[in-house]
Amino acid sequence: MTFREVLGLVLITAALVLIPVAWTLSRMLWLAAFAMFVVGIALFLTDRVSRRMSKAETGGSSGSGSSGHAMPTDIHNYTGWRSGGRSETMDNSSHAGDGGD
Image 1 (tube, rainbow, N blue to C red):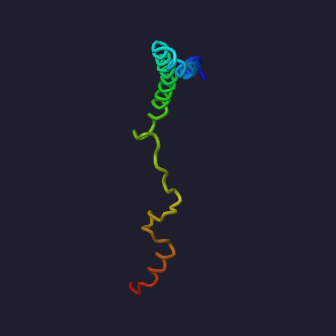
Image 2 (tube, helix red, strand yellow; image 1 turned 90 degrees about the vertical axis):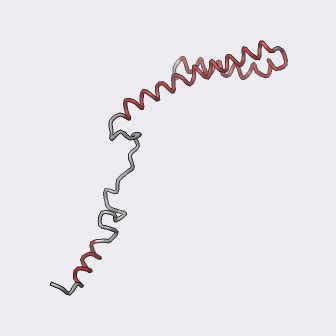
Image 3 (cartoon, rainbow, N blue to C red; image 1 turned 180 degrees about the vertical axis):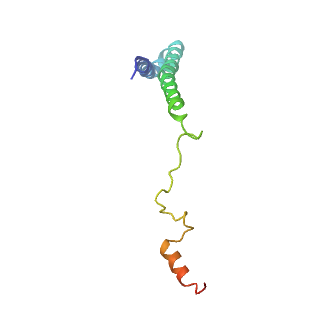
């Protein structure tokens, strides 16, 4: 965690502690606690979002232009789509029973 994230968490925690006290004492203290909460959220999230976006730009650009999560292919033909759903033994047995030629 960076200093910016730690400072954001400290401001969020302090604001959450001050809000119930501010409800009973004064409106200005409530506004200050709310401002601390908003600033803490901004400090905590902006650095994380910017790092995630920069990581996505550098890591996600190599590919076919999709979102970076390609569907896995059936490299071992487990589904049978490459052979039309038939196994080789069925193809061989059907050719043997043609009776023609």
